[in-house]
Length: 181
Image 1 (cartoon, rainbow, N blue to C red):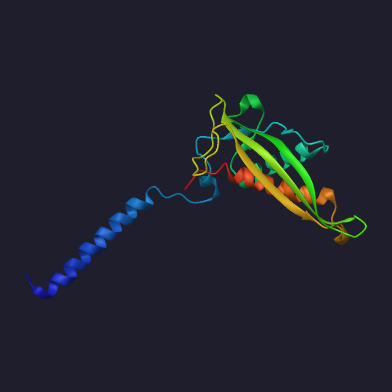
Image 2: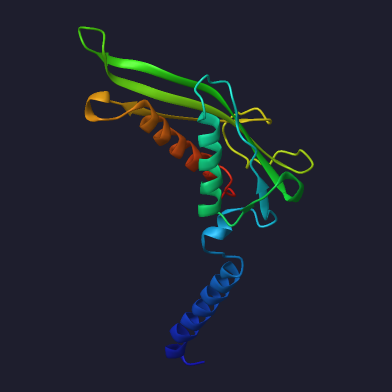
């Protein structure tokens, strides 16, 4: 064996091993937004979220935002209960408005609008479909919370702040439907 050919043979073996390892690794690699969600689920039913809030139409806003977010960001189709593989239920547990800053005449200048939502994603057999997390949550529920600052003096209203909170909540809820890495 020629001593000059040993480095070449070693390089060829190394290259072959690297190519074999990469091709095996790529065999299970998936890409695209559709791969972020469970492959065995095609449809989801989203009933109108329940609400413990006294503010009217808040649960309808949130339900509509979640449905739009599901259809925009996932490959799931929102359907009626009878046709659905899964059901995404929610309940607005808390809706509050806290004053942060007020004038000397007790007029609010800056407020915090907060909503807390309990979410449950189940299959048609009633089994929970929440990915495993490191957070110690009860098996039956997941809590999502979002808030926005309301400053009336710059033209914001309670409705615009609530809409901002609802949109952020919908994004979080749909993101929770992703498959863990």
